[in-house]
Length: 358
Image: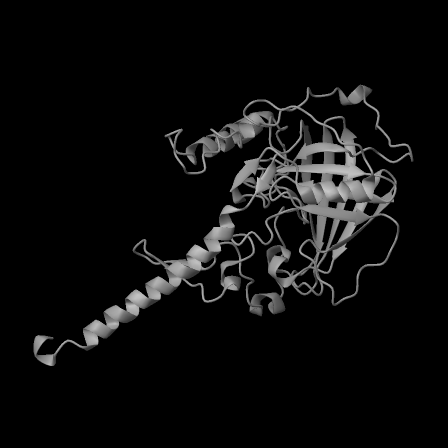
């Protein structure tokens, strides 16, 4: 998948229709890497506000982080790292980024270092928490309900590939649905919730009194969230990113999302009962405290909450072009059929061997 030097046409239409904001151009470095503004002294900082008095969340942000979603066993009972532990965790995380890239800079494999997709080039602020999950206090996802344990797992990215004990693989691709929504480029990212991944962890926020628009860097996918207290869509309407409705609680933007599609429900939740509540609170010139609460009583025994710091970076984002996977789905299906045909011919040939030769 590749990034192109252009804004998403979808985002452009959304902004033109919904926000009526002027076009602008911001330069980036030659590598395309997003550069982080200088850190701000929060003691002298005051919250910037829009003309209607709400905190100004507009800008380019990244959720880049090496902090795990759940607290590792070695940090049980410990919510925060020491400065020395934070430094060690950052170094270990950076080493993993470099270790996963090929040594040959001309390699056609995804070289995160060469193409400016590493955390090293984004300069995010290290997170001192031992886990992104803050509730329950143990930093772990609550147990699943008996109903959830019986629920068939939704098809995820590359679930159609089965690896055997000898390193060989079998591909199960009877229909395009078997391949999943990510490999087929139907839906890649965008939340909710917003969580750090391997690369392209940016989110662009625009707002006015009536709407907030969130554009994910990964997938260039857009969420348009109304703030006018309109009700959620009907229960039979399910969308890739759910149906979000926003409102302000003091200086916190609160977005409640329901009506998810079964193919794109977070962690195989129940699309009929899952509600994700996000909170965006500007805490510094270069930081938004973003949190989300997962509430799905048919999937987890109790709600759980995570905090993901969003750090300011310089934009714009390049368009994330998923065109390669439009060919992938054809090739995967054709390859699966060819493998099946070869196996059938081999079995047929074996059955036709005379008994005297067996």
